[in-house]
Length: 192
Image 1 (cartoon, rainbow, N blue to C red):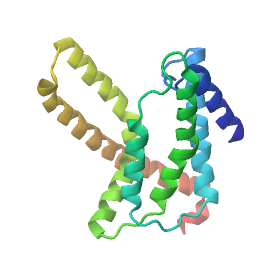
Image 2 (image 1 turned 90 degrees about the horizontal axis):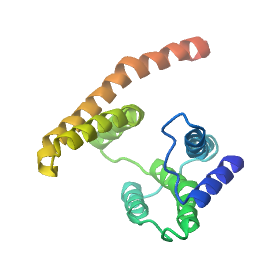
Image 3 (image 1 turned 180 degrees about the vertical axis):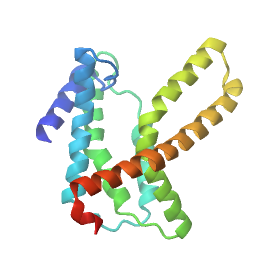
Image 4 (image 1 turned 60 degrees about the horizontal axis):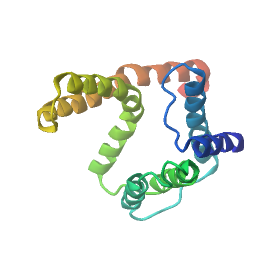
């Protein structure tokens, strides 16, 4: 984690951002792996070593913190990229894990809230994986048709519904069966 965190700080301070990692060029691969490694290892560390506490109004607090962090514009201007890089590093290394911890330390008080949270948790990774190609197709349509926001709204809603339904389908038809199969193959004692 220290090496991954150091690489993330170096990347963000020298570039002023961590945007990239979407192609198979050497620089883009470096950006992509650097963006991935610290959050991945921090998530593993949190899940294995840190026991969630009890935080009242965790959802509200996490929401406020997340909106605040995401509302901050680029810091330092074009001549001082390192300032924005330090801010990004602090957010990714400290604030985002704190938000995850706070969220895990909250509790749901209603059965309906629990169902919604379970559903959103189940589809979160499939949404993460499949949303980008659909957004690119939407953006291409908007660009080709010079569509305004009002003209785009029906397609925005269609993309949203399509992403959620497709993510749920991926979860039920792929993720659950593959997990069950892997559990049976790798952890036969867990099946009993």
